[in-house]
Image (cartoon, rainbow, N blue to C red; front, side, top):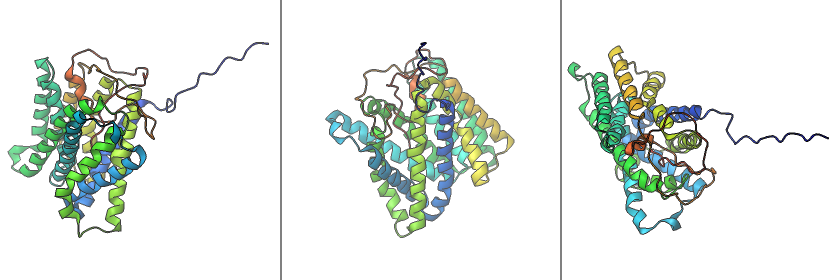
Length: 339
């Protein structure tokens, strides 16, 4: 009697193209930022950042159980630094969104990882991409019209600087902690540090509606969005993921139009296109070479990859890596996510 051919088991989530999960993650992040504007009007930008970080920290601690026993003395400063960078980045970005359009804020912030990618590469030609993105930002802000909000732009620059520092420290933390374990440590640190700015703004204005909205925003980002990113990274090359992430400024504009009813002019759309082109171009070269495997810990989500964001750190080394899918080796690493 002929044997029945064995059926090859499909990995969980294999039916869903990984790029769709990455796109969904970016849309969730920008949706969270757009929805945060309403909360900013009630408790301020600092208060919103603080509440979002606190909600995300509580959820992550509950589902991931921070691996505190694995923390070594050499890990303390990178973890504290990454938490501080996350807190500064979140507070500064929401402060920018309160003053300038969402797409413009995302584009300016995007200068941070682009600049880090160029400066940490041995190929000076990569400097053309941050310069191109800067040209796009100039078209976005239209300083010649005299309507630019310098404080809003300044906050976005601070957020971009925080993002750049975050990327550099993420490499250290990502080599030691896998899955959501890095997030479960750094997001609570960010929430504690953001208390200095956020608590004075939020205390006295809190009610159940504000807390419920903050909890929902914290669930969207970092929990759901970074979970989707980790799933996507398991089945995508870092180069492909990073190239796809270049669309994020465009998603910021899209959500600004749909949720906040912000209407960019034609010249500003050209500026966004330049920023997206710069982000994609910066990803065409190089992928970071892994050093040592992090200690395996999958946590509740069963993942061994680090989430976010930002794959721009892949440019530190110049090894060619074409975009596309590659088999999951169970040990892909990215960064633990930005809030």
